[in-house]
Length: 379
Ligand code: ZN
Ligand code: ZN
Ligand code: ZN
Image (tube, rainbow, N blue to C red):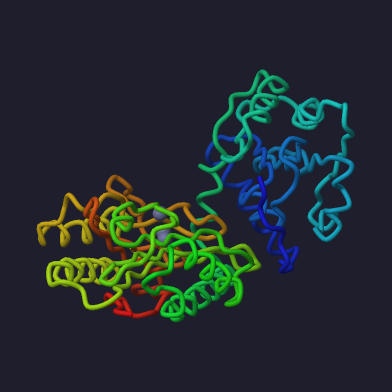
């Protein structure tokens, strides 16, 4: 796993507050100990998410009421890489281990006899099974069920980073006429778009989807050697992390020349549905209500079988995280939540379209973090 290293300092008090909240949330959910390996959960808690994949690095965070201090088990050769994380200030005991030692036994020595441990959702199976053997008495559950409660509600600094990411990806969409021209391939355009994402402030181009003509009907198509043709409709869905790790994700649909009227009509229904779904976002509404608004309007236009996916997903340190905007999710929206509103319509073998903005739930509605025109942009 590679997760970009933090380059933006987060104050120790903020990390201490997050660890405290996580240990309280663990106690509420009857999890005795959180075991967090590198990934976005570790980045959230300690502002550092990267480390080797096969050697165990693991934060042990006891639930509130358990009196053991938090501890970090880390390979000795990677200990210097933690120099900029205020582990002392956070009261984290650091235990290093050398190649040839069994790090899972170190974890079990520190852990005592927990009844239930929460393992990081993205923990490699090799570590999950190593910990299961070393902590044979403990049952394992996912730490994500605990940490989602925190990570879903963004604080002011996180919101600033998501706004920064939104502006950066908007600047890339504003330049799309440079990249999409008949005769070029999706792959050529995609490489230029990836470079532009970095130029405009991303740490890296996380993902680049350029779906032209029939390829636009596959929502997660990436790029291919297909050449753009006059009249193509092109779905461009792009995003990635800014240096602090927070992600952008925005889709616009472009037309290379004036589109035919059935396309214009279907697109108008899509745009109407996206607008209505954004307008519906407010504290106290449920995630599934927002999905239902978009889905209802697309169905009313006779296009229900062309809308293949959920309406959106939360976004933060992960591109896809809670809350998911999907039927069955009764999670109530609260100020500080951020997620995509991205209905799409797909006509297999012909064309597709999607409109995606990230929204921030505010006290009385929402703020869009993407502001490029949502019309079918004719280039
Ligand atoms: Zn997607
Ligand atoms: Zn997207
Ligand atoms: Zn998305």
